[in-house]
Length: 126
Image 1 (cartoon, rainbow, N blue to C red):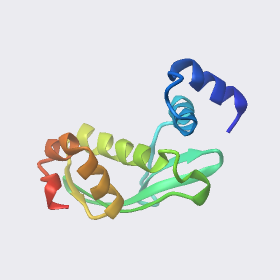
Image 2: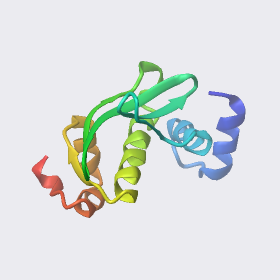
Image 3: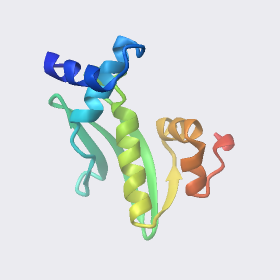
Image 4: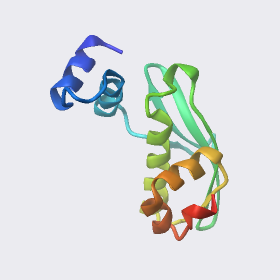
């Protein structure tokens, strides 16, 4: 990560936030949007030349999120959660039903019960 991004993040992050959080803040400020790759059947986010993704299948008005992969180089930077948020935004924006088969997506929904409930999912079921 470039020093300029870390410095920019420090401008927005209070000094009490641990240093590793600066990296997350700088990532969130510099990230490209999650895109849908219909050919591959996945939502993708590329950061620093590496692509994280969630595979999906769609039948009618139902979107099933199957599997999330985050390259080792991007782990611990909030990239997986960003891909999930992008996928959920797409599902929400297109008024689709959600089936979370992926363990990472289920974990995300458990940590964000308000989003699970928005899709009619009981987060305590995970």
